Structures are given as structure tokens and as C-alpha cells.
Image (cartoon, one colour):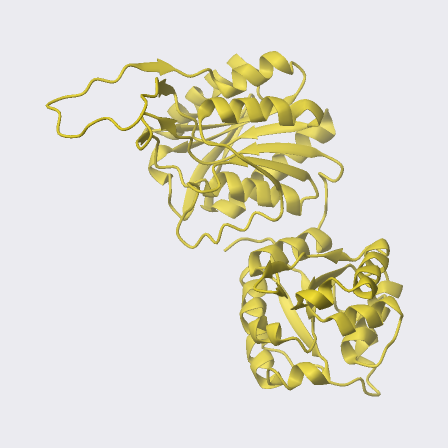
Length: 399
């Protein structure tokens, strides 16, 4: 997996929503990203999922009552165990009590303690939609947010404000608990393949799934950046990808021209652009309707598309730009040399170069190429995203 939550202690507060049935998998997901997890449950939550199941998922004892051991202070006090308190799911009842400093459950008592001790708090609400729309609940959310609590917006489906996806909750938890060297920065990221229309049915495209670009965008958000993601929301999918991009403002584009135009617009107030998309090198004049099948042969005239990085560089000569370079085969020195050609031509901060064979794969191997050398990375694409985010933070910090 990745080290999004490496060496992070997460106190997981579970309230009495039916979404509590998802806590076992959420605890597993937090741990897959490196966290240690200890759970605290309300009495209502124990009626939905047994504490033994949560104990199994966390491999730690579960707090179901506050005793003379002052579990809330041991977990969430100023010198407590937790680096972050995650309330998932959080009911309307729990959010309202936290807003009023009402401490009548182990979860609300931990929340009051954490807020008083400046321990980061993340809240993932889950309830029926009319409850979520109640003015009092909305006021409570606004009040708690004003104290620095980060909310992970629920998914509004079937008349319910369903708990956010595990990916969204993990991302928000990592952002709250970790360092944010990119806080205050706006970064634009391009991801995935573009599609060039041949006719009303057919397109020219490539094998890119967009997973690397979305992993970079997610890692940037974890490191504190405000992220704008440009990609084809329908086409950019990979194995095991649930399509959750709640960590970014998303602009849906399809063609190379649309992506370039969107990048130019988004970079008006950006601090950096990372172009991880596999943008088409050629387009074709679109024919109306559908080209008839069964012809003996068909010739398409391809025209080169403008390079996105060159176009953005011309418009924004001082903007920090990062490129991705995919090449088939070759050793590291050859790959790095080709990456530096792009780095020098467009005046990039650095280039991430990889063998084209990893396109669409779950893991990757890449080089982070600078003018003074390169570093090799092997592992998950999310791990590569963190490596890119940290490199960018260094570049922005050093000016």
C-alpha cells in the first residue's frame, strides 16, 4: 500500500449510525495505509456492530465506557496516544453534542478532550438526508468546523447522507494528521488519457488509466495543497478504482485541446502545474456521423497537437511546471537523458520518467529527474504521488 498514515495513531470514534457496519473495513483500510487504530464506541454503536468485531479489525481493546482509567485523556489528551481523532460514522446526535460540549458518551467525551488538547479531529457524518438538512444540524456542523474540525462530506444517495468512501476518509485523516508543506498552494494536475474523435462513434486514445495522475493529486491534497484535477471522468478508470476524487476540484475534459484550454484557465491563480496526463500527440479531423464499416481500407490524416507544457509555459513564463515522460524500454541513464531534454526545453522544475510498460498497472517504477541527477522510485502509484508532492514542496519552498 502507501505510507499515507505511517506512524500515525488514529482514535476511531464510532457512533450509532447504520454506517457503523462499515467500520471493520474502514479500520482495515486505515491500517493498510500504515496507521495504528484504537476504537471508541457509543452504546448505540455497540447495538449495530459488536465491539468484538471492531477489536478484531483494530487488534486493540475497544473503549465502550469511560472509567477511572480516564480513557478519553489517555487517548486524546495533551500527552495522549492519538495523533488524530476520526469520528466515523458521526450521527446528527453526536455532531450536535460535540457542538454543545455535551459529554455523555465515550465518543463525545473524547471529542471534547481532543478539541481542548488541540488534537486534530476529522468527522465523517452519516444520517438520513432530512436530518443532514436540518438547520440545527447544519449550524452544529458550521460551529464545529469553525473550531478546526475537518468534515468529510457524505454521499447524498437514495434520500440518505451516506458516509464518505474509505478513500475519502483516509485522505482527510492523513491530511489532518500529517505535515502540510503545501498548505496555501494551488496545484493543477492533469491525469489520464485524452480521446480524439474520429467520427461520432470512434475515438483515438491510449492505454493510460489515469491512476498515476490521480494518485499525485491525492498526495498533493494530503500534503495540504488545494488541487484542481483535469481528466476524463468517464474514461479514466483502473482496476480497483472507485473514482473518488473528492480531494480535488475536478474539471472534466476529453480531448487534448480541451485539456490544454482547461489548464490555461486553471493556472491563472496556480502555484504549480503537474502534467501527468497521457495527452494525444495527434488529432484527426472529425467526420460527421459514423464512418461506414466494411470498407477495404481507410486512411486518416493525423495532425500534431500542441504540447500542453509548451503552451502553458508560453502563457505563464514564471509558473512552476512538472512533467511526466513515458518511454518504451531503455536503461535509467537513457530514460533520464530523454527526460532532461523535455526539462531543458520547457524549463521544468523536474520530470517524472517511467517505462511505458507500467501504464495501467497497479504499481510503478519511475525516475524523479532533476538537472543535478535523478532518484529511482519503485512501489505503489500513491507512494510515487507522495514522492512527487514532497519534491514539489521543496521546489516551492526554495523558490
